[in-house]
Length: 102
Image 1 (cartoon, rainbow, N blue to C red):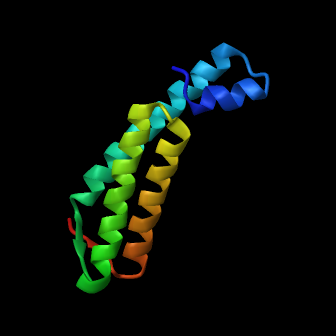
Image 2 (cartoon, rainbow, N blue to C red; image 1 turned 180 degrees about the horizontal axis):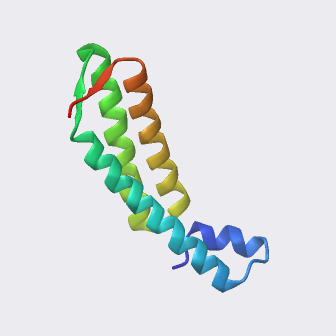
């Protein structure tokens, strides 16, 4: 895989084996957290309907963006999108805009 991680690591003089290892780990972590996020979203409901729609819209947009970047091999951006989606989710829960059902 010749993704953005390889290009950045190559500029730093990091060996191909290390680059492959970093890419593999980043892809695995991104997919793992993306799956967890999608499972978590099944348990999320609106607590404040007016504000919640915007939060859910942004979370779903970042999930879609993450999948897009994964498909393109841009692992750094894919992981970034997962982090942003989780941030929107956590902030929505902390502000009582979203609620988690059991």
